[in-house]
Image 1: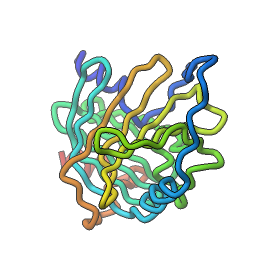
Image 2: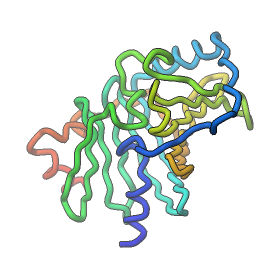
Image 3: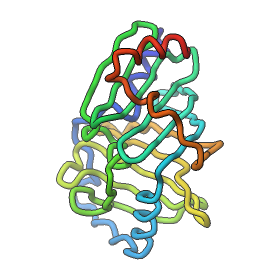
Length: 214
């Protein structure tokens, strides 16, 4: 039970953290990202229509979990955690649901309030209401850090990509207290499209089918 509570507290989709996060007063602003490289990342994300991967989630408190992630753009995402973790996370129809299979209890938040909500938009634009704070090559990967414009206090999301070809491989959510939740992706499949019913938690039959699937 304690392990489950620690993990759920660190889940990366539920909400942007609400306390102050900043670069620190008096620190120089980061250099502007390379526009051509930024355009490549933007084009890749907008061209991503279906994405399936296994994932390993590591939290600052040491909790870890594995599972299967689905992204079907625009608008749909599903994180199906392996047992014994009972959590299911689904984004669909502008909402994100976190469902505890043991308690059979769902909780719902707007997708726009989640760190990964930017990936669900019909058109992703890395500008305007999204501020890019860093775009750099490090450790053999390309790392893109961003937050909602004017809302740096909410927290920061970093997406990490391999290049040639470009592929999303990891993301990290940094909260206001400097605690990081990192999700690493592997066994990636961008060709298989799932049955969209696995995202439809507003269908009255959804929870019955989930219990049978589990």
